[in-house]
Image (cartoon, rainbow, N blue to C red; front, top):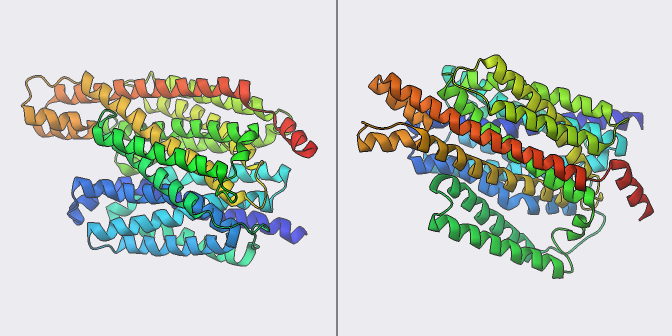
Length: 501
């Protein structure tokens, strides 16, 4: 028994290594895109598909991945996912054309679609109620840790080695996870053998892909674009059809009765709201560091570390407080700190010193550490061992869609404000179009023209848009605080209700 207690923490450590690889892969590509455009002669459309191929496959396969783990064995599918993720990373590294890289990125998304939900689904299997909260803290930290590490390590690799090295970076993490999961993790699967809900699999996958694609295009083309509106409406219609089918099906892909449990419903929805704020910050701040502070990719990653430091300290504090303070109060405090951090961020100016930015990002990260692991723990606490895979996948699907909406909506706010605020008088029409595309393009043009006035205008306009975006994010955090106080049950109440039922 003592040996098993030790082994499960080693298993969690191994899964955390795999998750760091997934986080690395999400951000390291942003660093590599300019190099890939040159080395592979990739067009702007192909560069977008390097990103979209990963996110769309991830959205499509999340729910079926959770179901397959429950049905045929979580360890088995985790091992296959790790092997696929490693092989696809090697494929990306040695891609000779944009088409090959797009295909390899899709395979990476397939591997991640299994790794993310199944790494959560084993937590209710391996850990008891008291231990699971701490385990979720470690999972959430690992899930976030790869985000700043990607630009830091990727930037250094791009300076010193071939661009393929940024994808080979995943391999050591995958190998460690493979060995540890193989040797230490017990197999687990549902004792209930349900028939495959093929129609549910197809409709959920199509609906999530179409909707996610529409959200992605909304960030590029605007919310009033015909293609965007048609795609979004089509995705929503398919997803509504999926939900109606789940209500009628004798063997549904997801158990809709989970939403009757306030802990699952509000834990999932509020975690999605937190993801909304995270993605907004991660969309704006790297651009701020590069456009305003003049940092390279390596420097950008380093400057994001205070957020991760705050997250780690916040998660540890939440673990300590959990025994004495109820979950609702911890999560509410987390949302307050997130809102304060983002509101302070909304006062950032061109002349602001990095110490100020690091300070408010640390506050934001601390609030994140208090709120997110607790919310995730509340949600997975309602999952039975038999359905933990598909239940975890449902939580992650909600967060994935929430993140995509966050990037598209908040990106639209930032870009619209930037374009409306920038001074492009006396510039030729063709140059004006380029300057308004993005702040990065504006800085490049200003440097090329040696125009100090244009450079100041680009930077001030970007910071103006970023401040509005961060203020909006702060407003969503305030909404999360209010919803937490009204709807989130206390953890003790949830446990009592489950025992009574």
